[in-house]
Image 1 (tube, rainbow, N blue to C red):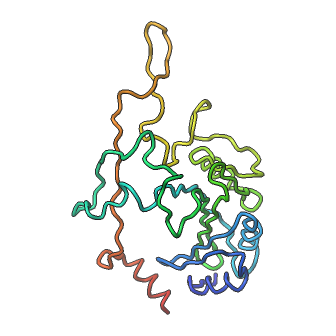
Image 2: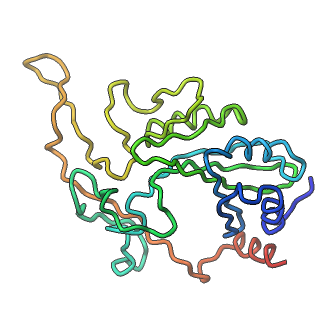
Image 3: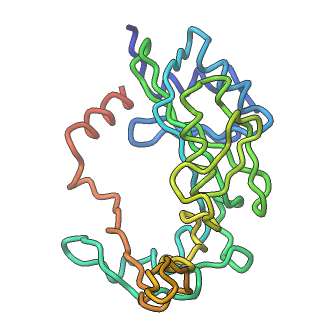
Length: 246
């Protein structure tokens, strides 16, 4: 094993891929690169096979919805509690909290859906994050990575189920967590948090019936606010910063 630093990895990535990598960021001891869909499989194959990288393991793949990023009830720094615990607030709109067409345009995220891959190189003892934005917001389509890392199969099915991202070339793209007749994608930011329907047993019909949600009050659980505060740095983060500076 020949460990390399995040800065060294970033230099190798720039030298190898050039313009095929749209954006490269080194932060918190990890490198993140953005790759266009047209180059995703090519770049990932090189990351797996070439001696400078050897990212043999895909540890995670997930979908991301950037709808409302940094806006709405999530911008809560003025209302954060001293302990930083989650708290419930009233949603700002119904049925979903945000609307993509009228959203404020965040300068960093101009597309809505992305697929994020986390890779691990055992040979160089380092991790890498690869992000790829779908070119279309109405129907997000990205190439599958199952030909590069077969383990991506169920991860991509999960992202398809929860976010509606279609992975072109996937051998068996079906829902994996929701029911067969489920309508919509529950992790999209415009999907109502209380759902669209609720079920109950109807004693007269002697069966389970589906009805519009009426028994649940829409509430939003706002996560704790994440701040860049050096007082709360862990020993691991400090070691990563020292390593990067060296």
